[in-house]
Image (tube, rainbow, N blue to C red; front, side):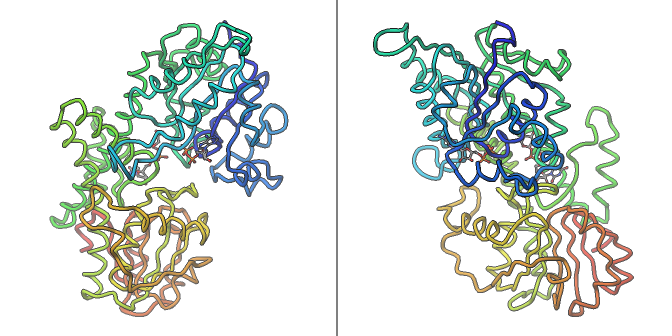
Length: 483
Ligand code: UDX
Ligand code: ADP
């Protein structure tokens, strides 16, 4: 089989992974028809929006890619069955959150959506279909998919036409905020599978724009495990630098100087050494917890504990920042107004999943603060939903308290811009590194605040001197000199 035989791709799941990934494949492979399907009608409608600013995923450069391919060979639809039937290759790109009930709760991934998709593919596919797992999945999920599909495999009887399947693992390494560049210039493409023909069919699609030496072929399980461990290694660096940041703050060192010094060692490298409010996003925590579950399952408790600590440290960093705000504001924030700048888990995305802002905000609300929240890409409803989701969570396994049991004294409001958020505030807490927060003219805005006022910069993006010159106090993560 060569690439010419893949004429029709269906991607199930039009989210942060499926949406941008398929847009780039369609853009780069004009001869392949790509249909992205989702059960969520509103989401599909948003992908079909004429006004490209209303796409459901905010991602720099995505609008231009969608503009080039949509309607030509890129389609967004809710007709899941028809798109599966027409496809030679089906990507499964649905959500796989951590289970919150039952066996493995708090650690294992909830595979119900993957299972539902596999059943649907088994039912609707025609002829030979290559099924590609694209979601972040626990190791050996391909086996689950294969076993569901094999029950539908047939030689072609009067019960229905011939069907056969191959399963590949093709993990996504894009980071939100830089997804288009990551997809167009990936460090590597990983394809795991048993059938060389199927692996090569997928490799030749990526081969349209990715240099061949960057396309790695592995067995299924190596591919699945590589995704989990790549994310675990990245997250581990963040927890490591955040632990060092706390030490810097009490010793007078500056974590940025330390990060630069250690990152200059080519064996360590410069990336993922930015100290901040802890990592968020849909992948890191989930993948590490998956790894922890897997290690415990296979009788490796020490290895499980080792990785679990990366998440524990991350939670601690978020709690530490909330605690520090309270302590600095004379031990009580009840009734005080605090402006929260940033709700997304990082800049250049509207995604708020596992954002450190959520738990920090919870802690501040618990202390009775009045919060004025502003994020340039996150709307009020989404903030509401994210804070609500946290309330629904039964018990965060790595946090000591039951979030359900908290009754808040505090209140929050969503604001439309920085000025509104800062009006009358006793403190500002910067939680996402949006450029407009780095560019705040403190001289102009400081008079809006109630004195003595504080800036807590958990992303270390602001100009310390300008803040001091404006008569404000400053705390910057990992900065001993400023304490
Ligand atoms: C991550 C992986 O990078 C990507 O390969 C995988 O496919 C999905 O998970 P993503 O979660 O989108 O991507 O963003 P990433 O840039 O990795 O950032 C994750 C979190 O770490 C963010 O909250 C970010 O603010 C934080 N971070 C990142 C730091 O605190 N410091 C750093 O130096 C880098
Ligand atoms: P990710 O970040 O992994 O892309 P998202 O939650 O952003 O995760 O997207 C996953 C999408 O998959 C959601 O839009 C959801 O509606 C969709 N989805 C889940 N199950 C199915 C299914 N069985 N059929 C079609 N779409 C599904």
